[in-house]
Length: 88
Image (cartoon, rainbow, N blue to C red):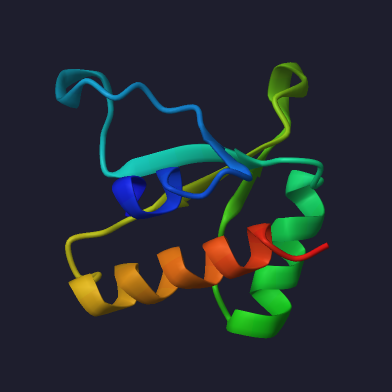
């Protein structure tokens, strides 16, 4: 997931890249997009729950993955996030 969305020039990864410094979640920003609006849009249009991280004015989005999330679901989410980041 991280590698796929990092390729998009409109997305900034905030989670550290070192394996021992992160868990099964990725925090990121979509340039010029409000994180709360992005999360609301995904919930309404894709039935996908992403968390908006607004503490300390981060304006970040967090995707968390559970053991029961399969690789295909992760790939679909990465594709949708990249498509969304390329809009407007």
